[in-house]
Image 1 (tube, rainbow, N blue to C red):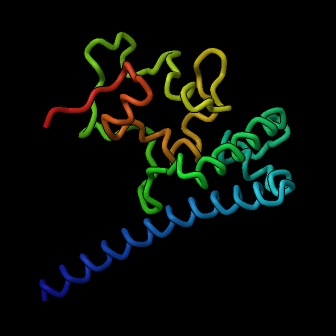
Image 2 (image 1 turned 45 degrees about the horizontal axis):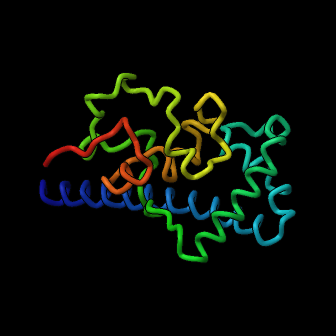
Length: 176
């Protein structure tokens, strides 16, 4: 009897994990589909303005961020072109859990870094990709929003290659 209870509990746990992965993949696919709709039609960005406002700024009040529209639309076209050209590939699995910080089993803060856990006003990674969400003071307008957590920003860095590419002074890989 105990075996059946353990097996059922294990099955429920596995099913719950699979449903979570399906939820994360669905959220990413909805974002990617909305972006593709916007890139292909042009007008789709305006029709989905509340959704994009939520995804990038954490608010449905799209009128507050309307001034960012042209920069984000231009950036979406640049990313789409780079993706089609093979120069850009997202490195987050569709089923990966959202993340607001890097995996601390992979990376650690560089002992030479003077700003504690904060990135302070560094922004080298964002400057390198000309991110339209980077403000002049080095802060991110989309910090810890859907886009931040579900895509590359929140989990950066994951490899030494990323640290080198972005010339990041904050992070180093853990020695294994």
